[in-house]
Length: 362
Image 1 (cartoon, rainbow, N blue to C red):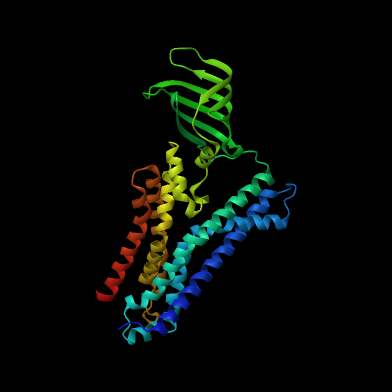
Image 2 (spheres, rainbow, N blue to C red):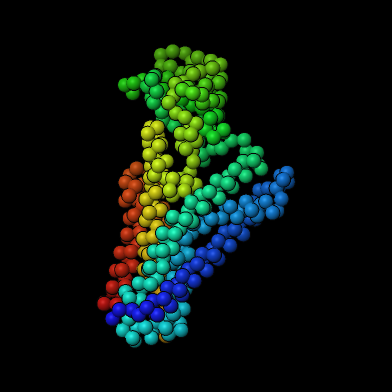
């Protein structure tokens, strides 16, 4: 029996409303928490009005909410399935000869569309809002520079003098100015030449200008110089791209940016991985629906609903932890980026299908 158009439209609308309402609730919750934290941070900062802080929190929220989208789909699907079961609509559909696979086709189609829209439209919008929020914070709080986490900024460059690894604890001027810089210089054959520690560095056309530098050369005493020039082929744009978090780059710009970074001799694994994760998102959302169905299609009168719902939540959490673990392995280079990006979604789908097959066919 092929599921009728009326029933398909009903299920599609029902699931779309529930999932979008769940996501909206998550969005509001994240906005509220971020607003409280932003107000706490602002304190007595000049110009930090309540309206501006609310706008800043609103700009922050889409990026964080995007990370919670799979859970919104999981909980929304579970709520929708349980609602259909509680009102005996699921019983009627089963009595009419509708199999679980026919019943799941409309929800899967809905989340497929949601996944595509979230990648093609929502992600670029949230990335643009995050960049605007960063610009407002830099101007408002006067940080004077940007850093890339506790590890700082790492660059690998090639020039006429050989290769060099540059580490900086702080970045400013969109990558044109570095602070607390360490350079490990190698010759064309890859042999270590010297180490340079400097208070700061400025990028000029074709070279870095390091100030207040200490030069350590094997076999010689440490030499202190006021200025040290290091040849480079990097541009300000390439340096700035090296410390832009992959999460703040829109989907449509990830692949070109990764290619540009690799041409500059830098590591683009994070951007490649982010691209694969976004492409796999529609399949991940479908996996969440299958997992939700595995733990939510039990009839209410059979009891044990609370245990099954708890099992669905636990399964979703395990899938999230597995996703983070595989992503970390991909970022470290232990697995390829396509495997790291797609394997959690594929495994989630296989798990849901396996459980449903066991429940339906024994």
